[in-house]
Length: 253
Image (cartoon, rainbow, N blue to C red; front, side, top):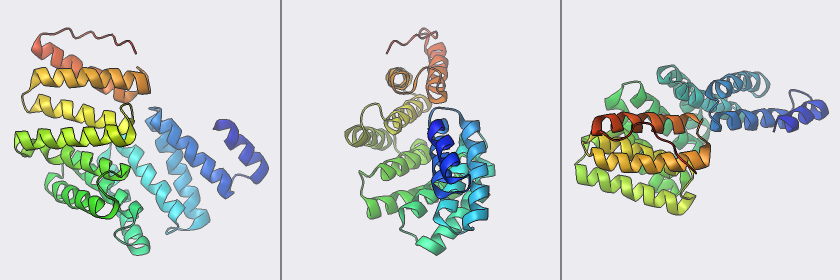
């Protein structure tokens, strides 16, 4: 992807749409590989360039701004992402309407940022609404709907009846495995989140089992050094300390 970007800059110039598109693909790859700060910085610059070239309401500008906000959140600063996501959402509502997939994705990301920033009541209301809207517009099995379902449960499952919450997590994981695959990042994210829910709900032994499976899957799919793999390893180690199991884990793919 780096070489494609070099070639695009040489052939088309730095401000051509093909070059800008290549920059976006490369930035996204850095983020998915776990280099969150690199992705954040690249999307910040790309969003600024697209704002100048294409204007504030162009779909590419809004996409870059939304992705900038996503990697701001991944860098651990959800509160800084909220005003940017609100601006993107207002523009998408005006330009694309409430049921456009990009509008729905922005609403889901904003609700997630509100939850992470501690705005629990507002986040819970929006998480429920946006989950229902995803199901209505895109169906329960669409990958974007699966993400919205995960975000909803992440925000509210600790307040739900334990059996209802556990069944909802299991249904989501089963659907995600069927649609996306066992080692898809979204499937592994839901597995990790269910493991954390089990721990916080007091089912420590069950949580250890789920997180061990998640750690194995994330090591296979993402590598041992990816931040998601490390997060599962760290949380599992904390649980092992509590339950008296071995905390130093070595996972062989």
